[in-house]
Image (cartoon, rainbow, N blue to C red; front, side, top):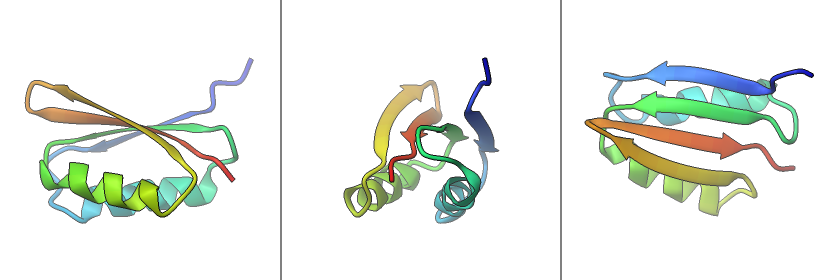
Length: 76
């Protein structure tokens, strides 16, 4: 069974670079693929939430220490 998870390390990148990395991954992902992105910039939470309200993608955010773990599932 194929693992359709794309992992991105965007730690230490300032906004809006984590969101740009997400958008690039979504462009190459297929519907249903999961993108897991780790970031340290607190402003990335606002950027990700704003972005998914304009799309049909699913988003979960988990704070782990000083990192934010974003999971986005691509929806058509």
